[in-house]
Image (cartoon, rainbow, N blue to C red; front, side):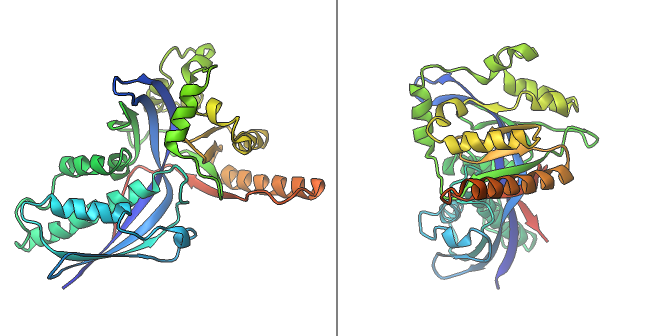
Length: 344
């Protein structure tokens, strides 16, 4: 008998991204305010006992499903193998996974990490059902801490994708401090438009190398000194979100990578400037790019901002008779309070 489990896997953006020097091993010390958003993949897991382990991945409908890589190296397959091998007595299962891919590939929004977290959650839910029937193997299902530990072996963003919501990330990005915002907190949700040049992908190792080589570094916190922020823009943003002061919090949003990456990818700087000219409250790149987020006043303004962006690009292209440039995929989204989640 098989069990069908549906999981929603939200994307993630970095509202702040600060680089705070290097560890002795050469890895970068980061400080970032991470946020799950309503753009999400939908994964359906069909799990049953089998004579031997088997994993089948299939791309379903979804804007980016045709680009989704189906291979044994896929993070979903890796997560399934890791979960089963972590059991005291691994049990052979046949796991079929159908993925509706709505998060762009290579967008820097933890789409792959969210898929891996969804796989861990689906398997744990399967064994929780078995436990209720008295037939779960020993040591399964796993605790949340054990699942987070598994996730960290798959990628630095997997634990956050599992937890979701709003959190500060430190260290290499693996140390998470959740912002437990009160139910009546007025700082969230934030409404925004995401912009991702369709064929542009930026390799994270390249971005770190480019930043290290950039001579005239001017950190996010240094840029914000006139606003009373000395050396911790991320902390300032967190403090004001907790105090329900959205207006103050967004003044600290930003990204240390932009200064090093924009000279090579001028289209990203152009997207940011276009959104600001159209009335975005703030606009920044998330992580190492290439996705740009523009914060709106509310949900209606976010839709208007998207439409205005599209119209301005069309008008500019028509007037200049310019050659068609790389199209930009736009998404109207809002912040979420959860990470991967089982759907009934």
